[in-house]
Image (cartoon, rainbow, N blue to C red; front, top):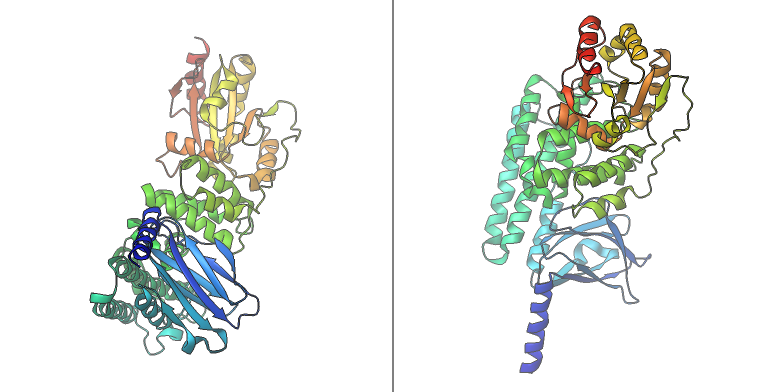
Length: 495
């Protein structure tokens, strides 16, 4: 008997050592004999990673979770019933349930059974699921003031955490206490954000709305109650819902921080804004997680725009060692990048540089023009000042003809591929003789980081590189400053 106990102790220690977490169970009355499972990844919630787990003839299943970090395991039992359980390293827990009488038959076993039983109670105490805008009157029909609703939400958040601490003084593990407390925080903050988003959107559509400037103040306030950039809340799916609201509804919608005023949502151009906003407000490990998780979340909702697949390629270059790469890739694996072949024939004098993705950095681009002075015009189809300058370039074109062997006019567009036709049309309509490139994400990022502030690049931007490829004029004159520009270029052409 002692040997058996020693063996069991050794096996338990081995499980803890290798970070495996096991959750088993028996489900009776489930016709399809399979359940869908979402596992935590390194303790964090990551969307769209559902796996199928088969039940044996007796309805039993076993789930192994790697990683050695505690987190929430989501179980989808048929189409109607979903529950969360908490898994921790070195423990084997489980459940038993009969689908015919789900609520009364659900029970847990194992060393953490009491924790998971408690988790079911607080999950069922939630007022309403989050993930989309929700009417305030559907939640608090008797309250209209943003301040009162905010105080009610914060009060309920505090009461639930107080009850958790009281219940868990003896029975709950520190990991469970911390994870559930964060989960409570982000649930209630997401709830207030969902109501704010609903009321604001209703006001924009001239529908009945409670939204006032006070609502905006409190909507802003919830993002500082629990900083999104601390990253610790990523254990909960409500963190991701709040992050989505922060980027899409609050920053781009309410605060009107859009850079592309005519972003085409059918083509998914809003995701370029998501990427820009996240790089602007987050750094380090939480940026790495937020980028992968939020864009994977969009893909999991059926947003299959090719831009998501392109943003994955950008992420791969930005974070080549990221542990989230395989998860992100899985989310976008069925999305194809629809790029037209660069076999399009421009009129004489207009030359397109490289195939799609062939020129990924500034060094490769300038390497095409060794021994020549390069005047680079960084522009975009949506940039009105850029288009104005195209119509002021007669003197520049004459100089280029005069120094045909020595001067290169290089036009680099920072548009995405969805604007390919518009890009071509502008080039042809303005008879822009010279060399043209539609920059991919990697080059676009390098241009923004090198010549902008890391998140934005003021357009149009003009640069002069000498015959050795050295940047000699980081703020070159624009074509409308024709006399000054010609003098500026000639000093390098005559060397």
